[in-house]
Structures are given as C-alpha cells and as structure tokens.
Amino acid sequence: NMSKLAIGVDLGATKIESALVTREGEVLLTDRRPTNPELGPESVLAALAASIDILLMQAPHPVAGVGIGSPGQVNPYTGVVYQASNLGWSNVNIPQRLNLYLTQSLPLFVQRDSYAELLGEYYFGAGKGHDHIVYMGLGSGLGGAAMVDGRLIEGHTFTASEIGHLVIDPSGRLCGCGLHGCAETVVSGNGAAAQARAYLATNRFPSTLADNDTLNGTAVLQAAAQGDPLALAVMNDVADWFTRLTAAYTIILNPECIIIGGGFGKAAFDLIVPYVQEHLQKRVLNGSWQPLQFKRSQIASSAIGASTLVWQNEKKLPQTLSDSLTNSVQPVAAPPYR
Image (tube, rainbow, N blue to C red; front, side, top):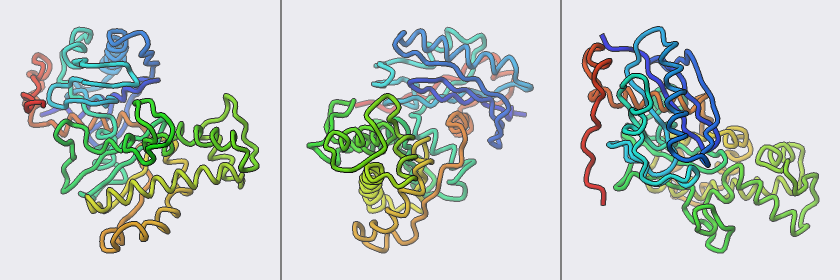
C-alpha cells in the first residue's frame, strides 16, 4: 500500500515554499523560508532540506517522495539545474546535493517551476478535464508551460514554452537575460512597473503614480482599477503583448484553455482577458481560437504543482513503503543532452 502523501517544494528566488500534500491535492502542512540565493547554492540546498525535514517530521503517514519546482533550465531525468539566472546557479545537481542534507533518503523529482504549476492545474485546478492546456504565470517574471494530448511538452533541451524570453520588441527594454524587449519586460508584475516608469519619464499621461519604491505591479493594477490614464495605458500594453503570445500558442498548439496564473496574472485577469477576446480574432484564423477558454489559476500554492511530480513519476517509485524508506530512487538515465 503506497503512501498517499507527497511533499512539494516551490523554489523561488525570494522564498522557498514547501507543502505536505495528499494525493487529492489537499495541503496538510506548509513551511516558508527565505531563499537568500546570494549566499550560494549550498546555503539554499541546506534551507531546502530543512524545509523538507520539518514536514517529514510532522507527517502523519510516510511520504512517497518529494517534487521540486525550480526556476531556470532543468533536466527532469537527472534533477540537474543547468542554468537559473535568478538564483545565480549553473549545473547544480539538486537530488545529489540535497540527499547529503536530508535526514532520510527519499525519491526526489525536479522540474521547471512553470511546468510543475501546469501539472498542479491539470490534476487539481483549472486544467482538470482538459488535455490541451497552455499555462502562463505572470509574477515577477513570465513563465510558460504547455500540454498537448495530456502530455507536458518539455522540448529537446527541456526549455519548451520559455515564452518570457520570446522577444516581442527588439528595440525594447533590456531584460535580465541580456536580450532586449523580451515578453516578460512588459508581461509581468515587474514588466508593468517598468513600463509605468518609462511612461512617467515621458509625461505623456496624467497619473497618480510616481516613480518611487512603491511602484510595482500591484500599484499599477490598483491605479488602473481607479481609471488612472497612465496605468490603463500600461495594462493595454500588457494585454496587447499577452495577445501576441496567445496568438502564437493558439496557432501552433490549438489548446482548449489558457490558464493565467502568478500573483500579478491572477490579479490582472479581468483587465487582460476581455482585451484578448476582442483582439485575438484579428491575429489568428478563426477555427483555432473560437473554442478557446481563458481560466484563472485555481491553485493557491505552486508547491501543490510540485507535489504532483511524485505521482507523475509513480512508475519510478519503490513498490512498497519499506523499500521507499530504505532506498533512494535512482533517476532514469537522461536522454543525451546536446
């Protein structure tokens, strides 16, 4: 009788959020702590382990495994994070390093954070009952994920749906990745704030907003809700760029639904979606967009999505609990990474 509990971890640039989650997606316990990536990978891995251990100690039943959603480029077969610029990581082997810190050896699965978020929606949230899904998470940056025929699309080097860094305007603002005019320089909380700053510098629109420390995505949304002309212009840009991304996804993948997540995305949903519905028909052939549904993310914590990595990988789990408590599962050999 396999355990029905998993631990999911959302490894973010600012916080580590871990959750003890049932197979039905119910959160029993959570732990949050700062990531402090500037202290280096070993410090972050020690904090990750402490966060997992505290949930393991309090778990009412044995835990089947741990799923971790990590930023950056992740090899899901080995758990290696090749590149995560917001953590300052390159080639960090999470399972190998983490097992040195954990008090008990557990099956560990690692996946790109936005992919884990889509899986959470697919199992427990807005994607339930859908097999063709696009997920876009608008937070401090912009993450994407897609599912076709019930299969997560990872791509040749595990970077499929890296839409935050699709360049929409080559003459646009410099992005943290080194390119100019990436989608996330506008379509994200930080992007909306940067767009507002750019407009404030031109004095084109009257505004209650000021270029100071309180100017963030939330402030732009609050001003837009009160009819602020500059904030509305910013949100118009956000919605326009979002429509371009939606058009590309729609033409290439023909999804049933587009799920909008992330703190900024959920809050901006009612401003973005009507614009997309009005303008999409001018951007794509009508047969592909007419059945499209837009849904707000229903998953409270991205750690829930990460917990589903354990059930996604069930065939690799030990078959009995006694096995799972004594043997760490070896990840499946990775396909050749070119």
